[in-house]
Image (cartoon, rainbow, N blue to C red; front, side, top):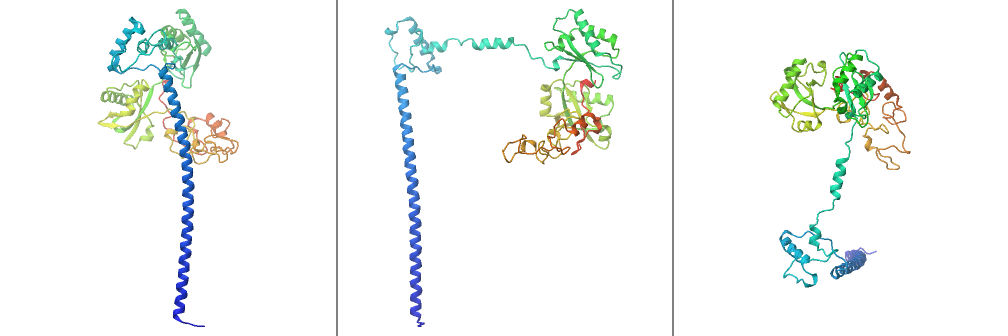
Length: 438
């Protein structure tokens, strides 16, 4: 066997040429495949272009037919409002049309708008100038004749009592006494009180008939008060059930305001004097109890405004108090038994909830609206594929199911003991400043 260097070098060179030929052949095949793909894509594009060309031809054909019909007068376009510069010319043309036969009119030179014959020998300009049909006026008249909607609050009358724990009278006797007073005052037949009840703090609540407002009854409040005083000596003057708008004012210095009546009256004067557009319907009150703000330099107060409309500027612009601009927030009144839609606890609103979210359907740590079934993709609602679980008691039902033992216990238990098994919440703001507690 020969070890000649020349022979060895020639073999290596031959192999290199063979590898190069193989690479070139592979590249040629790849290039050919790529060209075939491009050719196929071009074929598809030409096909799409042909389809688009046919569609465009059909559209042009339809437009041509419409234009032919318009020019023939068989189809007339909808009347258009002419531009201001040509109104005078059209008015002159319209006048000439009504005074001279149509066959003898000569077309005005360089006229921008043409008059097209319409029903009753009227031009488009004349039809456009005609007053609108009385449909809108008729609808407005009908709307004005619609009686206003009477809400539940519009039918309620509050009669405070002092002392609040005084002996209560028979509610049916109270109702009949009020109706006898109304009949003696010759009130209309619809002005009737349908029920009388006492709330938890002893306030007497009268409810009128569905078509009667509290204002209709209170026109005779002096006679009603005189008659009711005979059967319930603790009652005070009747008044409407008005829902005030309540606003929280944050950052009020605790050292500048006393807890007593004098301090609250002084705070009321400060608020109204420094904010002339604000009129309070009653004295403010602290949001928290004295022991909760004992070591705090600043705390929050609740103020009451006559209406939500008057409260909106306060919520947007805040208030000036004690040489500072204080932040405000909407007061959300909740009862101790109200359930939070976020954590499923009790005694607070979801907007003010500081706890982690719990699903109302499966008790997982996410908001209820984010609950998704992996089978049917149903969102935010229970379905037959998933198992219900209550985050409060662990049973197989939704967290807000009225049959839940925790909810039953919450509704029966005193307000100070209400809490869910899953979470505890400080009941801030539940001592709501409500007129019914007056």
